[in-house]
Image 1 (cartoon, protein in one colour):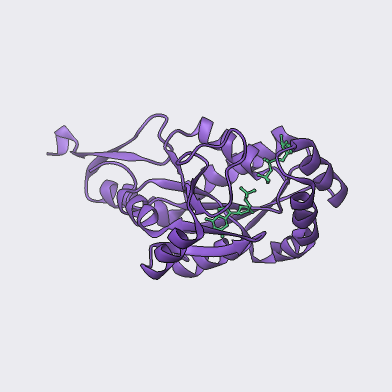
Image 2 (cartoon, rainbow, N blue to C red):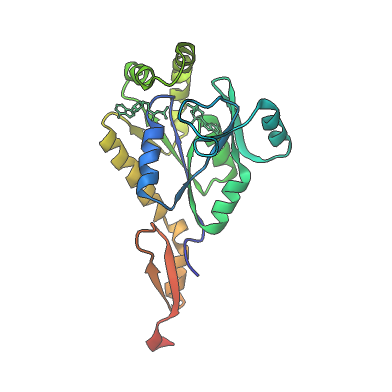
Length: 228
Ligand code: ADP
Ligand code: 5GP
């Protein structure tokens, strides 16, 4: 037997522009085993976005059909567009012990927590101020002015949802914010509930190795030779 028995579902949310994509990208670069949940959306691709990498870009009729076929673990209307998470992706990941990272809004985080209460860890990224949030959204230069206005209008409402989250990280200095996100991920991996396989294997007389560079994953070698 190898690997973890059950992975974790790491949900990162924030108002648009607070920096969650930047932070999530760094986390994925450092931890190759952390899979990213690519969502489905009816939003049009931004320049540089690729179908299947940032999102699966679908038209509203396809999205509605996917809802009818119950293919989403969660879905929501965000800033006037539909977004949804594939249920199969989550079930495959949990079944194989893989960890999954989600960049989804508070409505999605809430739905996933209700469906997978023991697996979901909710992280909220806070901008240092509303002024800085606006500056970042404009400096990013990826959205039309009216889209930015709309996102700023709902930012306060999104910020009020922080109470539903397990962790809050202020993204002022990017390196410091990243260090905290990284610590949350590492610590959550070693929660008792996620490492039971290791303890039970040692108790049953087997030898357990942690798999180098593969956070929290173990390999059970069977009984040590001298005990066999
Ligand atoms: P989100 O995914 O939350 O919408 P992004 O990751 O796209 O946000 O970040 C929004 C903009 O702010 C980007 O241009 C990004 O480079 C910048 N940014 C992210 N974190 C910081 C930070 N700590 N300080 C300054 N700029 C940042
Ligand atoms: P953007 O259009 O800037 O990529 O994302 C807009 C918002 O939609 C962000 O808050 C992002 O986290 C959220 N989002 C992206 N994918 C999903 C998803 O599958 N479900 C939900 N509920 N929100 C999502």
